[in-house]
Every structure is written in structure tokens, then in C-alpha cells.
Length: 343
Image (cartoon, rainbow, N blue to C red; front, side, top):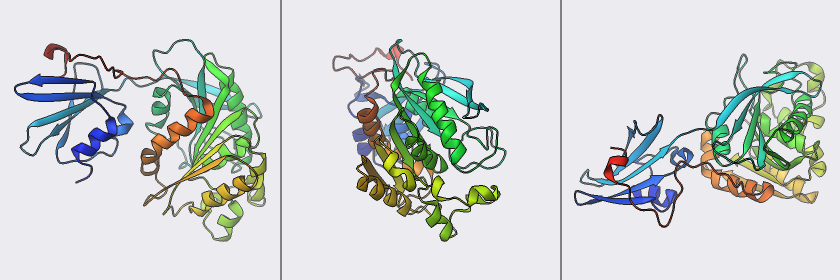
């Protein structure tokens, strides 16, 4: 049956408004969409909330008698985005998308370079779904490059990509509205490997977040687990240590958050556990979060650890001052008249 209505209400917090109609009290919540991702209950239905605004959505929670108990809805404005070209380490232009929070002032904002994982051949987008937009809604300027091997050039399994990412960080640091001293790198799977390698290369990196990234390619190769090398040039396969973040852990100065599903069959959880131990022994700042029952799957790992991700980035980069929200909760907010609310 999934989460109960009470669990959903605890998740989203106090209501923005309470409206009495026909003997019932309707509680309205304005929340970010990712908080409701994966929610399931027999008392919840999704409805179209237009014409308040395009792409608006709300959840209706019913009691056991099928009477409306609460309504939870949000307005998905989305982040402002634009296609850009980012120079790689050797000048190769790589396609990327730059996301920015809407409606923010000109103050400088923290930035994130967000790295995709190993993608199928012919992929023309990073496949990260809602995640860039969610980071931007939290007040970050987010750069999502299509890494070398997908956006152009030869894939050498980590070396060129880390140099490209270091160059992308410098490019992001130079953009208007970005604080050059508050930039982090976040990566998924192969992107997590590249994020850690980049942290050892660039002094500009102030936070590193690796979701289920490989860290010791020698170990993976020995157990025939690292099949991504198939089709890569032989000279790229010969030196696995230089592509392994555990080898350069002592050079990583930024705080690190490792997030991994504990039943990951693609990149075993021992990879993050080993990275945690090596970073700890070298005096680095590291946290490891394991997701029970999760494999090598984006939403299953990201959604339950999103609060931990926010806390980590806030601590490492400083809490953004411009968090995009369709409606901010206010203690003095008064219920809106029926005519102004979604029906």
C-alpha cells in the first residue's frame, strides 16, 4: 500500500493554508516535486490543476470514507536552462546544459558540475531526469556536460574526463552569478569515479558527491565486474590504477559524500567502503551513506538520501540564499478565498 497519508504529511511538514468548506478542513501544501517521488497510497490520486499554471499538479488525500482529507500540490516552474558548449582540456567543445534558479537576484550562487554515468552508445542527453532541475530549484547553478566519449572525442575511461571536468569547473566559475569559491562536483556511477578523480586534480572543487561510483578499477577488473572497458582502447585498460580514485585519495582536499545501494551488482558497495577507508586514513573528510535494498538505480538511491545530500552541500558550499519555491510557507499566511484556489 506504500506510505500512509500521515507519513506523507510528516514528510512535507506544516501546511501553507487551511480552508474550511462544506464542513471539512482542506490543508494545502506547496512542496518541491521530488519530495513526493515514489509516493503511493490507496487514498491518494493525482489530478490536473490547470488553469492555475501549466504543469501544476496536486495530490488529493482521502479518508476511509472517500472524503477529502487533505490536498498536497505544487507548481512546477522548473529551472531556467540553456544549451552551451564547454571547452574540454584540449579545447574540444563539449555540449552541456546550464541550469539556473528562476527569479533570483544577482547575488553569486554556489555551482555544481553534474556528471552522468556510463551511457548507451548514441546517447545525446545525460539521462539524469529531474535531478539537475531539483538542484537548481534549491538555488544552485548547475552545469551538466555530455562527457568525452559521448559529447565528442575518445573515451579513455576517466583520465580525459577528469581533465575536462576540471576545465568545466573553471568555465562555470567564470559565469555571471556564480560564486567561484563555492563549486562542487556530483557524479553518478562512472560520473562518480570522474568526480573523485577531479577532486584530486582541481583546487576549485569544494565538495564531492559520488553516487555508486567505482573507486578501485583493479579490484573490479580482477573479478570481471568492470565490463565498461569493453570496446575501449587497450592502452586505456592497461593502467587501471591511474583511473582509480583510491590511488589519488590523499590528493583530495574537499569533503566527500559517498552514497551507495547495498545490493548494487554493477558497482559493489565495497567500492565506496574502500574509498571511505582510504580517505579516512589520509585525513580526508568523508561520509558514507548506504541505501538498504537499493541496487545500481538512480531514483532508488537518490530520493531517500536527498535530505543528506542537501545537508552535505549546504555545509560544504554554504546554504543557497535563493531557493526556488512556488509558495513559501508563512506562519501568518491566511487561507485564500475559494475563487483563487485550484478546483
